[in-house]
Length: 146
Ligand SMILES: [Cu+2]
Image 1 (cartoon, protein in one colour):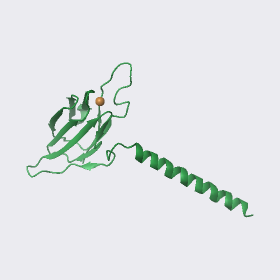
Image 2: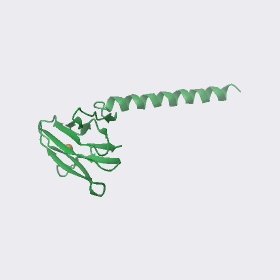
Image 3: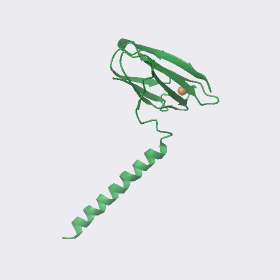
Image 4: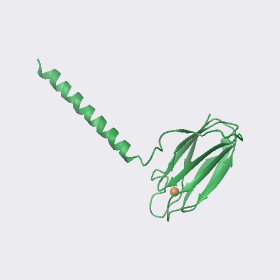
């Protein structure tokens, strides 16, 4: 009679252990705080300004939140020494078409004004054949327009 609850408890403890182990690995694998959404601050001149760091193979932050109808200025800074990246948002149906090259170690600034609310995918389509694209290696992010 006591065996069943013990087994159940044991399984519960095991699954809890596994869950925390998985959570620990997930946190350790995260290169930075890139998964935390960043609300892009509004500067005194009315422009939403932020810096996004490009590395192999990530954007940090990878999730930025802006407001519809306000100009956005993103400074894209590459911290790689050899590998070029780019910053693409291809959603012409919703008014955003951005394709910006960011050479190794370079910094470029882009400006745009999103007009439609929603979430837009950001990705790098660079690829050294026959290897997977940077996007396939996880170089993705999102622009959330509120
Ligand atoms: Cu890339």
